[in-house]
Structures are given as C-alpha cells and as structure tokens.
Image (cartoon, rainbow, N blue to C red; front, top):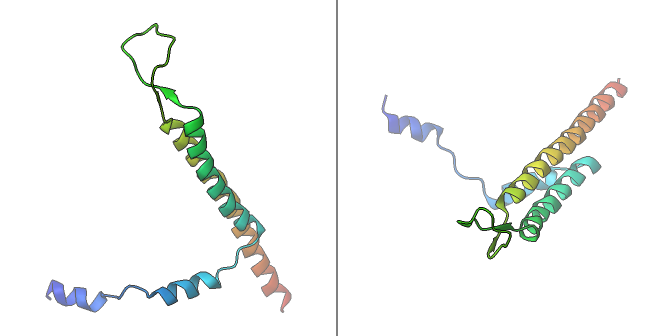
Length: 112
C-alpha cells in the first residue's frame, strides 16, 4: 500500500470558524468552572505584575556588594505564580466538572 494513499484516506479538513464557535457556544460552565477560568486569567496577570514588582538584582562580580545597580524582571517568581495558579485553577475546575457529572447522574436517576 502506498503511504500517500493512506494519508489521503485519513486526511481531514481543518474545522471552519463557524463550527468552532458553535461548539464553544454549546459549552455551559457552572459557577466553579467559571470561577476557575477567571481565577487563572487573574493569576496570569498577577504573575507578570509580581515579577515586575519584586525585581531581582543583576548578578555582579562582587560577592559582598549590598548595592543593586541594575534590576531585572523576576522570571522565576512569575513562573511560580503561573504554575500555582494553573494547579489551583485546574483543581477548582475539576471540582466543578465533578459536580456537573453528579448532577447529570442525578437527573438520569430521577427520570426513572
């Protein structure tokens, strides 16, 4: 079998913009999921803000220097805030998803 024939058989077109927006409009988030998404966006910008607010000193050749002549953006603090925000937001989103699944199960059980 020719590899190109196999590629043509499984080839799919990219989804159109209308299809993507229709799929996103079908999504409904409960309070926890909406809160998690909002919290992630806030913590994303907070990481950038804190990285700039708590700037680090540029490494100098003097070990005993108490002065900071040049400050730099604190990437490590920004990454830590982003990672912690991602973990917290993912945990809250998962709780919201579990609650949504339990509501669906309850709806199916009460219909009988």
